[in-house]
Image (spheres, rainbow over the protein chains, first blue to last red):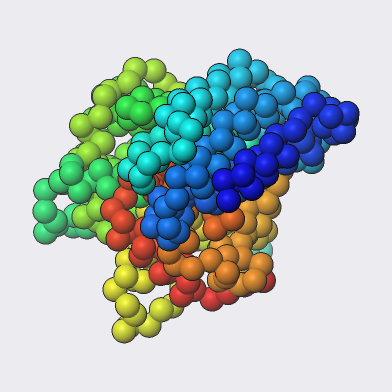
Length: 146
Length: 302
């Protein structure tokens, strides 16, 4: 189980390929989908709709961690196109990078807190992951259109 | 001949008086606030978040307590020109600190300024008109506890004919109503009724989520069915319980979205709606549940 999650994450985050750089929109969307997927296991556990499991929690945190360290490079100037990326990403690049820095900082802290086996219980997971999840709304408020 | 001239002159005068009357501001009856309890700031704070005041009236990007400085300044670009949200902090000169309860109630419930002028409906009194007088007075009591902020936010930038405020009087004749939008019947569940009040009144959800017809009035026949965004490109989503709307969302999904911004697919709200979620997150859970119950109960539209 643990190995499966680990390999899924490795596959998701195996960046740096030529196609990733040729199509930054697709790459950043794939990374945001990965973050949404992680939220999709984190939130049901937090809400008691899914049984808590430390390894699953770790998979979610590790995904956020990886996305937080990589997605920001896939927003080159002129890549807004027809996407929901807000023009402000390029009008206010410092603010955008600061928002990502916050994401990375909280995700790094969560990743470190998770340790080798994941947060031992739901409360520990909650403490680690809640500050990470806060970034979704605050960043989208300013840097995504809807 | 002379008689015809008199007659024509009479018609012009009567027509002019009628037009002037229609275009003139219609404030509340002077007794409208009689019998209310004194404004309660604690209750008013709930109304404040339900009303989403900070989304337009606090400075761009204000976080935390900075949101409570209602300096105004947000420019709302529309088909009619650019509207600038005013300073509504309790500053006596630059804000609304010298207003009476009645002045505030006339602004919220009738769209009329203390000087008896019309406000443009960029200020969503078209929804706030459905609020209770008590909520309005409580809200004002809360707003008076906020920090006064110096400085005028600036003037609207509107081309002719929209620069003529009297035109707003005619617009109100056509589109302004304080009646409920959706007929839910007398024996409606109290939670749904509360949701209706919040959505159609203070929450002013229909201002963005309903399409507008010719002249900019809300098309209530397609209530909450979404449409082109007023400002900028893009579309505002349909939030009726249809397959094009949010029919697949459970009431719990809607309530959780309003609390957290996460959709059932674990996407996270952005843009204007992220601001709305920040406000909605401050309401009691029962109010978010009530909004969800109402949104499940209204007519579905494609």
